Amino acid sequence: MKTFLGMLVRMGAGVGIFLYGLHLIGSYLEELAGPAVEKSLRRFTGNPWTGALTGTVITALIQSSTAVTVMTVNLVDKGLMTLEQAVGVILGANVGTAGTGVLAALPVRSLAPLFLCAGVLLVLAAETAGKRWGQQDIPWARIRLAGALSMGMGMLLLGMELMQDAMVPCRSSPALARLMTGLKYPVTGVLGGAVFTALIQSSSASVAILQSMAAEGLVGLKQSAYIVYGQNIGTCITALWASAGLSPAARSCARMHLLINLLGTGIFLAADRIVPLTAWVGSWTPGYPALQIANLHLFFNLASTLLLLPFSKGLVRAAAYRGR
Image (cartoon, rainbow, N blue to C red; front, side, top):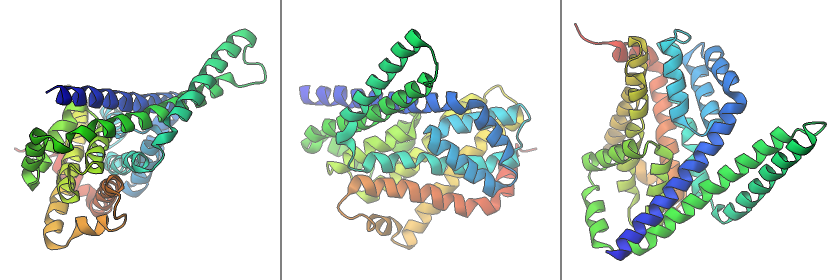
């Protein structure tokens, strides 16, 4: 019991630090380029393909598909973007957020103290010097931004380290073994991934936890695939909540986000029964379970985007349809 509670505390600390790291990176970059982000979303979404590229780049920069999707919903609500423009951005945002999992899987977590130390020193130096001497010829605000981003990266890596360490005592946990056994089927795996991601409001953190479990041998790649598909569905809940009370177009935009991920999950579940899709993706990096999951997450979103983009008009009609 004590071991289990200790694991929960360490896991909670890891998730919290990871999420705050993402928040720190995203909020500072969004603050730096907030007006430019909205302008880019409106300007470079003339067709679904350029919209998808724009959504991918912006999400990769600010490290939050949720922020980009909610921003898109609000732009649609204000009439500054049409549903036809929004569909590409949403698909691209799914691709952009998958890069976090790849970063978390790389062997750079030992650099967390270096990032944190450098970030703190830069922030303190910039704030102290800025108050004492003003801006003058040295852009202290930019130095402070660099420090904050370094701190965010350090927290992200430290959170991943804590999450994986929390999983070590669970290798012999009967309770966790029973739980993971229950998630080995497509329906339960997808549902479990969706519910957990909806609860913690971050697919990046949810994928990171799954990577930590895989690194300790607690979950296999086939089972992880079902959970990853569910995680992409669970992340849609934030946009659905954000659209409540907004215009019908904004609610359609949020529904379109959910529809895209439901269709992607259906396609991959069906494809995996015909061809060994998951095993093929796993063969890219044998012996590295965390990176296999990151690759699977990225491949799922990239392939779904390429498959669904040609049908963007149909997605818009389906999301906007409310019956007679």
